[in-house]
Length: 470
Ligand code: FAD
Ligand code: MLT
Ligand code: ZN
Image (cartoon, rainbow, N blue to C red; front, side):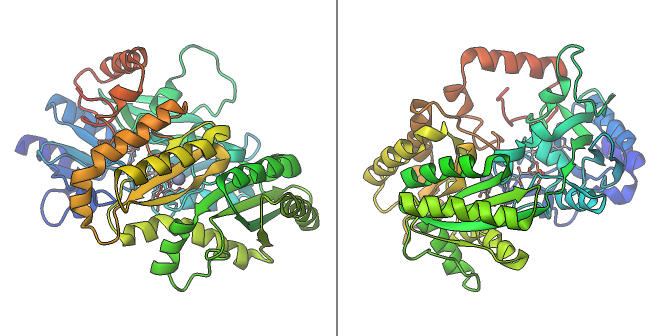
């Protein structure tokens, strides 16, 4: 292995091959669910350096774990504890390569932090709409490798819908330049779409060409108290009707989830938390004017109050107030982490079936596990819930996970299947759900996935143990 380390040092520079000292930032996942051990952490600065690293690892049959900001939720970007894998961290590759205003595209290195991409787009007078609470540290490569969702999907789609082209280093260390920026290209299989959502198991994304949009003239945020999930769904219907394509965000938050924010971030003001079972955050991005957006919002909320699907509502008066409301929503995962380890789910269900799913599954879990606490929030506009399960307050979290995680997952995922949903809407499979996939994906789909994996990575060196078991 010394020979490999030496080759890696020659490829990227000795300073960028880390083998000693505290490597926990690269070896441990964000949620602290697992701590692995890397042979080395390698930090290339260019696509050619990535290709050299992959070729060296392939020659030594050494596993590679691609890593961006390491904010993933499913233990996908950290190594196992064998000490055999090279962690290939892309964050030194952080250049904005080009903005093509006429084509409405931006081309960036894969290690660019999402917020940097948003800021570069805005500086050029455009919107890059992908947005999530980890945007200050997650990378565009990680966003694409997980097909991240976030809070603007109801209008702009997932990371996949925002991507027009990729540059990829294959598992053999060849460079595929697919940065076409074309909106139409029917010349055979869509290779770009294979790599999006592949969680580092097929190759290394080194750059991407992403779509830009005109900046809205006005973006307004509202917060509504809703008495039930049925009411939240009725409000969503009204929002679609009143706002049309202006509806850019529709987030639902349960009372207990917001209570964790109140408990752990007491400086934040959380409207209607005490008196309402659910709250909804809505965003309206308008191409006409602020007056127009405000009038639309007022008509929508009046209709909602009249209908009874909202019992109270506020519209942010200015950007600071809007940011404060979004800040509450974005702090839920952090408040939940403060509360302790938990069982996290990112399920999707056809929107129309969500109220019945919640009613049945809440009752089932509470019956099976006494004192269990449900931390429920998410992207209702996309049919995607973070249906999370926290131990009873007095329980030891580790012991709770050991005793109940398998059972809780089986209960929730069986319900997801019954209601025609998916066990992962946005975080992916990683290692946490790798044992579950064979139970919830069809054998035909799994066979095709295996064929793709074997064709593109015949040695099985790309992120082994993630998504598909050997
Ligand atoms: P990493 O965590 O480093 O990697 C994630 C996966 O992608 C791993 O399998 C890794 O091997 C692979 N990978 C990373 N870079 C590359 C590359 N260049 N080439 C090939 N494979 C690669 N996710 C959502 O979808 N929606 C949300 O709303 C959301 N909110 C979040 C909020 C918080 C507070 C946190 C901590 C996370 C959130 N996430 C969310 C999860 C996470 O941020 C996203 O999945 C993000 O897209 C991961 O980016 P990353 O750069 O951190 O990737
Ligand atoms: C979110 O929507 O906040 C994220 O997906 C993170 C989480 O589920 O905790
Ligand atoms: Zn989410």
